[in-house]
Image (cartoon, rainbow, N blue to C red; front, side, top):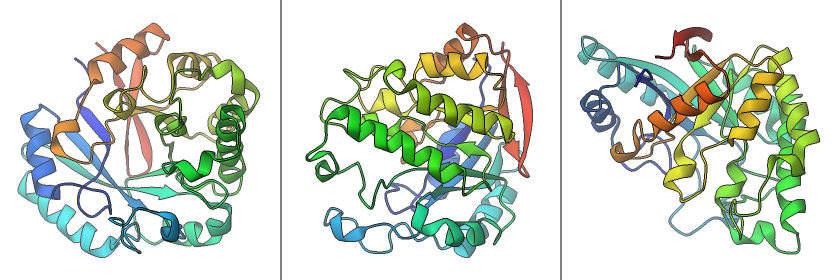
Length: 276
C-alpha cells in the first residue's frame, strides 16, 4: 500500500474523541504511518440543546492552545518515527461564517478541513432532522448547505466527508445515488476545483456499515473528470483502532478513477504523493 498518511483523526481534544493524542500517535506508528494530521473538531455555535445527554455543552469548542502545545511536544518526541501535523476540522454554519473566518486565522494550521455537521440548526446525526422530510429532501438540503457555506467561508483546504449525511439517514446509503443530487454536487466540486481546494476520501463510512467510504466512487470519478487533483485520505478515526482503516480500498478507488497521486497538506500547501 502506497498511502502512509492519515489526514483526518481525532483525540480527546475533540468532544467525541475516545483516546489521548499520544496513544493515537503510537498506534499510527505501529500501523506504519509516516505522516498524520490531527483535525480536532471546532464547531462554533453547535446546537447542544438537541444533542444526547453524554455530549456536554462546549464539547466541540476546541481548546486550541492546549491542543497545539501537546501536539508540538509529541511532534518533537516522535520526530524520528512520524511527522505529526496540526489541523482542525471546522464545522460550517451560515450563522457562524464570521466567527469561523476569525478562528481560521487565529493559528498557523497545517490543514483546515471544512465540514457540515449542522443543517438548518439541526445535527443530522439525530433522528429529529429527518422528521417530516423525504430522504431526497433531507439529503438534498444537506448538499445545498455545503454549497452555500463554502461560497461564504473559503479559508479551508479540504472539504470533509462530502456525503457524511448518509451515515445517519433512516435508510443510510441503501437508496443514495450521486445522480439524484448531481446538480448540487457538481456545483460543489466545481467550486472546490476553481478555488484550488481539495476533497478527501474519508474511510469511516465503511466502518459505519455503509457500502462505500465518503464520497462514493461516482463522485470521485466526477471530481477527476472535472479536473480535480487535490485529494487527501483520512480515516476520521476517533480511537486507535480506526487509524489507517481501509486505506487499501481507498488506493484502489483512486486508481480506478484515474488518479496517479494523492495529496498531503502541510503548511496549507498540497504535496503530491505517487500511488504505487
